[in-house]
Length: 492
Ligand SMILES: Cc1cc2nc3c(=O)[nH]c(=O)nc-3n(C[C@H](O)[C@H](O)[C@H](O)COP(=O)(O)OP(=O)(O)OC[C@H]3O[C@@H](n4cnc5c(N)ncnc54)[C@H](O)[C@@H]3O)c2cc1C
Image (tube, rainbow, N blue to C red; front, side):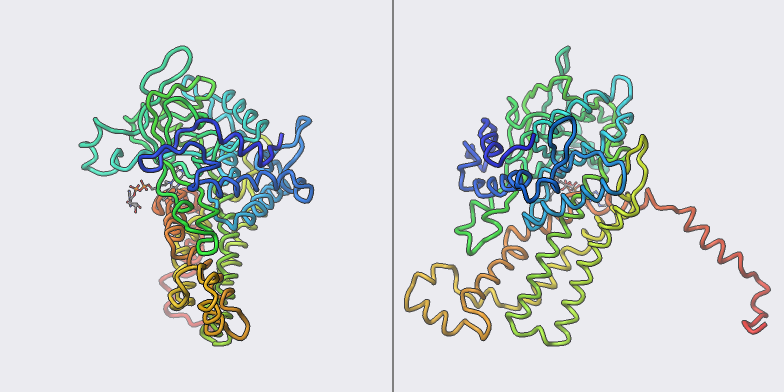
């Protein structure tokens, strides 16, 4: 079943408990901090049912149509189909929805391609995972996730012991025949305000003794005892769409998850009490690779928007003909081509996953994640440099067009040969919102941390690199000469 945007919006009115500061948000579809972004998510659902896109964004199985991200890929064509679906969807939100519904669903789909990883007696539950996959696929549900302990409740450093006994980290408080009871806090459900279900797990490695935290499960977002603590809403802070065109429509929300004695039935518990397994389910299945492949594709869409803006800014400022500016634009265009190549390479150099399934190239996927983390801030800084002080040369806000005489002055002095004053203002307001507003700053932080801190992302490249092959290359070269070589010349 493919849900309509309308049905999706209706399902958001389910009594979920979201706190914005001290205020409880009654209804995200009506609240000024969330309603426009809810509609932007609804648009993604509608796209899947749009006759022009339905074949690209859904597939048929078991007599029904399902969202593209639930396809379990068996060959390169299937991966290509998934990648194109991610791209079409990411383009629709300009790459600004990091946790669009295809992100976590791709993790779960990837897990179902190697469900045997869950076959650990008393700790992992293969059948429950497969049933859950069928459930979210059939009902076209949007799942977000919270997969890290809160800061201050970890065991990273030597001073962590002090925190340990009063750790607020989410853990299993009790269990009985019907299920488990969760208590504590988890970091950080992006999309939490807009999803149907939250997946709770552990992508940060846990110390061997944090067994109670080693739980993987999924719960409806309106579960009794669950509250979502949202950061400041940038949509709510945006005074209008013209001045903040992105904050006002694409604010996907980031929420801390607080569980106060939340009951979870056994049917929704996928791993329990096994620290290693609670993390292995991501890396030893297709989970981490399919999910983060979506992130790479989504970044590509965002970079296309940024490069387009850079070009328009250069034209608007009449500097596009300057060789140094052209070099900057060339550098940005090369970066867009780099991420495009990294995405396509992951599909064309795919790998077997076992049991007839395939996965995107894992090393290329991590290389792309790392590259994006390293470069996003740099890219934003480059385009901001190109903007010069333009944003500060514009009137404070769009109210200028209502001012009659002042607006005439604005159009007289601010217009250029090719652009009206209003067009210029629109361009720079958009660029500022993307690159420098509170919304823009959140995106810098997002691109740096959504897949975990950079040192953890690099550790995956370390883990998967073919070090023997690299060593062999050096050995072959070193074996081709010896100490006697210093007496020989090339001519001999
Ligand atoms: C905007 C945003 C959205 C997010 N969305 C989600 C989401 O949807 N779901 C989800 O589960 N998580 C999400 N995250 C959480 C994200 O995964 C975490 O931010 C990330 O794992 C880092 O954890 P932390 O923020 O607690 O920082 P910490 O782990 O406390 O790290 C703080 C600093 O210390 C450094 N550091 C810590 N340990 C080491 C070490 N051993 N070696 C070197 N440096 C170290 C880090 O690199 C970092 O610079 C999101 C984060 C952001 C910023």
